[in-house]
Length: 131
Image (cartoon, one colour):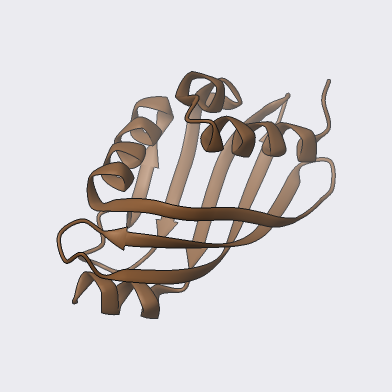
């Protein structure tokens, strides 16, 4: 079985090549995906199962244009992986751009990602979303 860090790295690689089936293939069917954003930001909240993650990804694509997305550091053990990174995006509704530092924390069990907690620089997003 692949190491937890390798599973998470493959999920990021799939995301960055726009391979949604590859991304979802790294996730368990009952994954819990939680975006720690602000109310008014479409990616905020808890999403359950692969259909929930698909909905979250749809919200992401509809609300922002990703200009840069860079995972920098992967830290983890047998079942928990934290990834730090940064990005730059444009809010489709306002045309405002923002830079964003982030930390994502994943739990991996039986070779699949079972949860994702996404923490972002909400102040820069709040300004760009004009909240």
